[in-house]
Image (cartoon, rainbow, N blue to C red; front, side, top):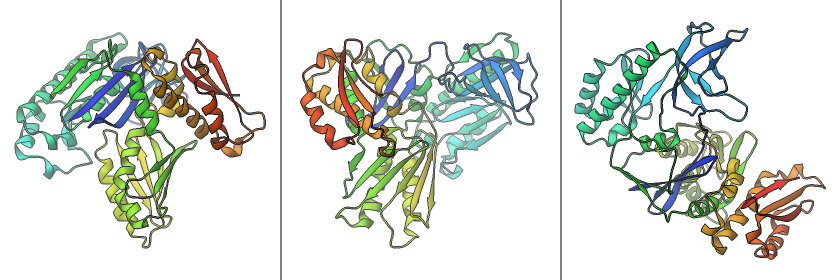
Length: 452
């Protein structure tokens, strides 16, 4: 049984999926009060259309105008009211990106506006759906003015009543959204999808438990079905989660079947280099494929991930390896595609972006009010601080070193005098000689860093 642990700070929601007390996947989501979140559905009013006619700017009631890419058959004019779904939330100064096609997700099926039909997830075949479940889907489709997209989760549905309950909720929400879209003449949100947490729980294929830190403010799971229990545990500490996450972000990881892998972040992609060491290279490639996929999910690596395996004796071996990786990635709640280059021996994973990665918000985690010094003991603090230092190291490219680069590790005065000796000891091991590593103390934050 899986366990979803949720923590919140002023800026982010941290979500960790645990199985057998081991962190297997982590997600981080911006908390934007009154902002546009991915998956939410809004009534918007078109403010303007650019000269090319390819984009419209829409007021959806969130302060910043959203961007609506227009297709040839989209007939909209300035001042029109439209029903739209947020497909990318606000980021910095950029407004949200929206679509006129909107979906209402359930655990086993998704309602979508458009042509009346039943379609099946690309990760499965229609033949994999039990006959009684398929008949139920056809029965509901007759009275539904839109498309029913069947999710791969339906393969784990054993109770036909659970499917009916899911479809009832999807169709009821869909009809309400359509009604508001026809009669409302004011902008604003009309459907809350539950954010990242909602998508995770709908994507889980087995029953689980939700454990939250005290007083979560942004959890909306009313339409999530299944045996999910929500509990508040006062003793749940974000420090425990952060320790697990920081540990999982080590650059070099030993593989269970021998060899190691090195994970680096570039400007536009992530690279994973597999090294065999003294182990047999065929064993390193084949037996560690599942472990490599788990590391990708645990770190929430998204975008393009390039995996450079140990040289193959036969070029056709990479095809079987890519199929094994593709099968494992199908278990992911986030959409991904797997490609391979037989000549170069590379496997490429293109994984949709969901939330942000730890690399992007590490400072905010340590500086957040919820991560207070009362919750972190000396050993935990040591792991967190060293994790920050290693993250700094991975974010500075050796070729871009300057003679005046100065890295300042910012610590709360609570830590003064505890770790200077150890930090100075590892400085020469992980930093270039041109980098000046210094420590600064203040009561304003917990742990962070700057590069001057």
